[in-house]
Length: 165
Image (cartoon, rainbow, N blue to C red; front, side, top):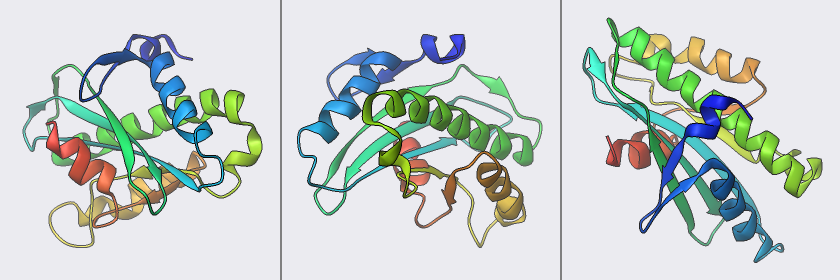
């Protein structure tokens, strides 16, 4: 685990937890009902501004039966262009997805990840001002080995993370 990830604090509806506690929460949620299928979704969002905090959400979805989510905020950073902000959001999601995957692999085993159980949700779409970044940020996520989704399927980014920006 990177030193940066080790310093992250994740919010829940009732508490603030560490990265290790986040992994334990996800692991416990999956182990409570192993007959079900799960998906871990990680996405980031920020306010459209030259200076903003990025919120990154981690959601665990019990397919067909709800789920839980956690979120963390970066410090305020400057983004001279929309492109800079979108790329930074994507990289925050990808970096955290790598850390979560590594930590969960140690607990759940490699077989859990055979069907793209961790997806990166990127706050770009087919329309609007972010459409010109779609192919490049999807390519970056795929280059890191993750399935990536965009709006309207990217709920971890444009619904959950957006809720806390």
